[in-house]
Length: 95
Image (spheres, rainbow, N blue to C red):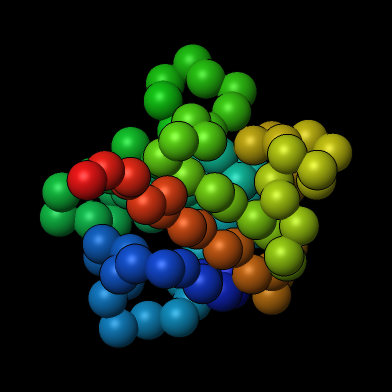
């Protein structure tokens, strides 16, 4: 299964790629984000263990341009071959 990635930062482990090939025919958004984290030299915690949502102060994630919260099952939404997952890191404010 091929999942396309869009991001406003270089996703660790995918610096020169715009997609990921996954061996699993059925994968949830949570499992996908955990897989991305494992591919990085220094893992990124996209999803806090036990959490059912992403921290909105840290991440904005959408599947095919639909915010993941509106995809019916949230982080349990099953991805399909050819889906695009957009991961945006939220900019920190400050002076």
